Image (cartoon, rainbow, N blue to C red):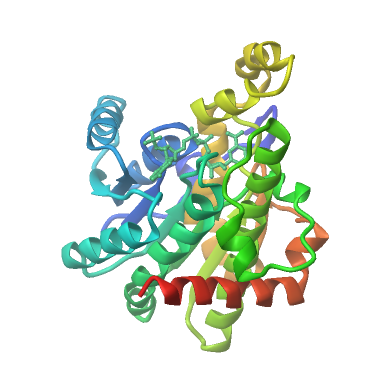
Length: 309
Ligand SMILES: NC(=O)c1ccc[n+]([C@@H]2O[C@H](COP(=O)([O-])OP(=O)(O)OC[C@H]3O[C@@H](n4cnc5c(N)ncnc54)[C@H](OP(=O)(O)O)[C@@H]3O)[C@@H](O)[C@H]2O)c1
């Protein structure tokens, strides 16, 4: 079936997830919520990593009322504002579970942008990676690391990716500066995901890493962002629900990356890939495929993570 966006992905296109454990950040609303719904309907045990217990409980209640078949959804406390707290949340998860098959980082915010979108997700992932590697060593495993990026990364054209760039520039004061920082954080996510894939491949660790632009999707976050456009924000905001796709449409590309049968059948093709809607291999900016920038971003991220120890 196809949508206005092209291809359509449904639960039928996903592998069976009974016995699999998933963590998804940013899942109490928007694209993340719709992704959890798709993965839980395939039988997964999903941890909704969210900062507010109340919002998570409301979302889980809503998910159950909309039918998640025999999957289950559980709250994992995660506040990405503080990378040390993110590491602590990952440690708490390690005490609960013996495997981790899918980690999908979907949360984002437009304040403390680089910390929330990239650094804290990297810190959270770093603590979980040994368990993901152990899960990947089991026969028949299909472990995936899915970082939700954005076409907004195309705005970012840094000449370097120093540690200072990761730690100093955090919040903008206008729509333009916020979008510049958002784009930079999403570029960092794409480069970091690719750097991890390269390292996994070199060490023969069978983890598939993907990033994507999920599409222009009508969500709370997108609506709030569009409304900050100077002068025309109110008009653009009113048009978003009419012109943008639904969270379910956004979730299609994310769920495909996390559990698509096609990815399982052609892992080499999808390793380190950047997808765009719906579930197609896309072309990121030239900065996102720059090997020097990628290695610099990776090394800078490692330095920042070391300082958190
Ligand atoms: N919507 C689009 O058009 C679009 C386009 C391109 C890319 N994307 C990307 O797709 C992903 C999902 O977007 P969306 O529009 O569905 O997002 P959204 O509706 O804005 O939801 C953002 C999620 O992030 C969580 N979050 C924010 N700050 C957090 C923190 N400090 N700690 C933990 N969680 C935090 C929010 O939780 P709270 O409820 O607690 O705030 C919420 O669950 C994002 O990575 C976004 O950049 C979206």
